[in-house]
Amino acid sequence: MRAAVYSTHAWERPFLEAASLSAGHALTYFAESLHIDTAPLAEGLPAVCVFANDRVDATVLRRLLAGGTQLVCLRSVGFNHVDLEAADTLGMTVLRVPAYSPYAVAEHTIGLLLSVNRKLHRAYARVREHNFALDGLLGFDLHGRTVGVIGTGRIGTVVVRILRGFGCEVLVSDPQRSAEVEALGARYVDLAELWPACDVVTLHCPLTPGTRHLVDADAIDAMRDGVVLLNTSRGAVVDSRALLAGLKSGKIGAVGLDVYEEEGDLFFRDLSEAVLQDDVFARLLTFPNVLVTGHQAFFTREAVTAIATITMANLSGFEAGNIDLANRVTAAAIRP
Ligand code: NAD
Image 1 (tube, rainbow, N blue to C red):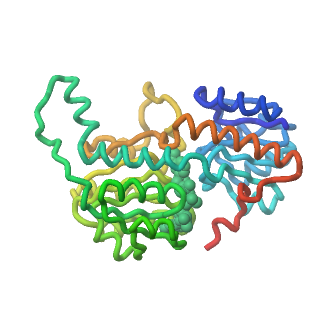
Image 2: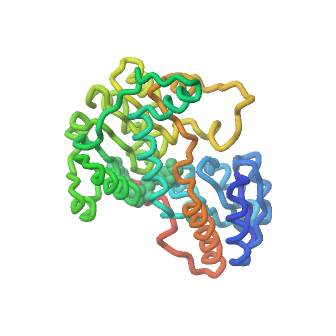
Image 3: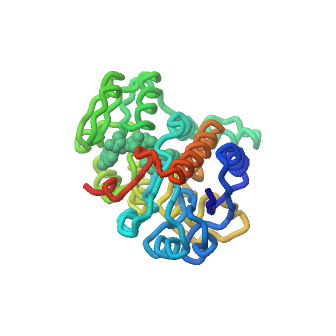
């Protein structure tokens, strides 16, 4: 099958090439992200293949369809960047990679937690300056602390398992209870109970209309003083301005982020020569107790291999008229 691959990065191309060769697909690679001005690049191609920050809105979908595209393949778990109502109305198929390595994201989340708690990001810079003083590097034992995990799907479950290994108490919130998570010793509670009880809160739910700004000023107010907040899910689950206010007041003790509300204009590219235009993001980077990574939680060899392989299987399934329904996303996924 012929497909336009948008937002192709040098690091993923060998994985995509290897997977497409064995599946027999002809991919045309574009470094550009998908938006209305780049949609014509897919003219005549039956499929497009997009990444987490491509903008697949209704206008883009209509333009793609006019050019003959019927399939949108997501190289991601998240689908918040696609107008699913529009795709359904236009009769276009959207397939995603529903799971790759949940360990990749879970382990990165724990990496952020250990770094911001034990100030590893600061220690690294200090020691290179031959500053071996310990002032300002004090952390706390995770053992015996209470951690709140929002979303106990594939990634959240692995996070719970790791945290239990550290000896943490774990409170969880998810509209769908998991027996596996309960068997690990975590307890389902509502958010009103979770916020004030936790030393650490970590987010693993999808971004939907219902979870947008789940962590807002009220939620932060309700949290423990000095709470550590981790977000490796999607940026807009957190209200960034409320986060800034919580950091400035000292209410929030530390933050580890792999995602950011407006990351679409920032992440996955080298902007080291550019002037940062996002003042909220620029301010976030000034805090010594904030560690930001640029949406790299998924970035392990195992995960990138799986993304490429499942994406090629999605193309093959569509071509054969036999799609894997578990990989299909429709607007039903975002309805309350
Ligand atoms: P999943 O579908 O297995 O699990 C998501 C869980 O969230 C489900 O159990 C669902 O019931 C729950 N949920 C839905 N609404 C909720 C709410 N209001 N409150 C609490 N829980 C709620 O997905 P996953 O594979 O575990 O991935 C979770 C999210 O992580 C994805 O949606 C994606 O946005 C993000 N992600 C980020 C990266 C990265 O590189 N940073 C990589 C992969 C996934």
